[in-house]
Length: 191
Image 1 (cartoon, one colour):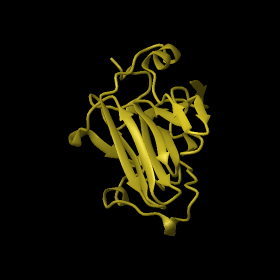
Image 2 (cartoon, rainbow, N blue to C red; image 1 turned 120 degrees about the horizontal axis):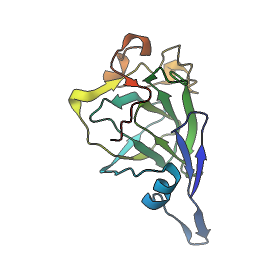
Image 3 (cartoon, one colour; image 1 turned 180 degrees about the vertical axis):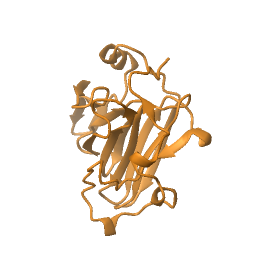
Image 4 (cartoon, rainbow, N blue to C red; image 1 turned 135 degrees about the horizontal axis):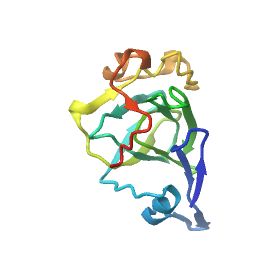
């Protein structure tokens, strides 16, 4: 696997090695030992999730507060998305900045979204299957979100606003400046 650092420390793009021939392909999508060696610490994933969506569905920007903060390892099995991680660690040098990457069935890229970041994605093709690992279970009492269209974040979601399909929950998320429920830079949320 190839681990690529991004402009925001902690957010990592992962390119698995694809072994293909006339029969199809084989890839290792996750190796705990290689990820641990790259990061310098172990992440214990406890749950796998999967969603299927049509073009224009936008899910996010979501996160969970400590003690149930989550690391996510995300990928696309079928179709394509624009995947986004936003730094929501107060006083971080990259606070409010984001990393956006296209994840597709063809490029097989993955993104590691660490604790302290909000995460979201927009579906770019019909019948897109999105899969991800988390290292903490869903916690309704710690579930939070930020408005996907907060101008301060400056995220280009590629599709026109009229093409975007949101859940009721995601139509009422606060802007980053309106929420106090975020993370603190310098705190180790993995302990």
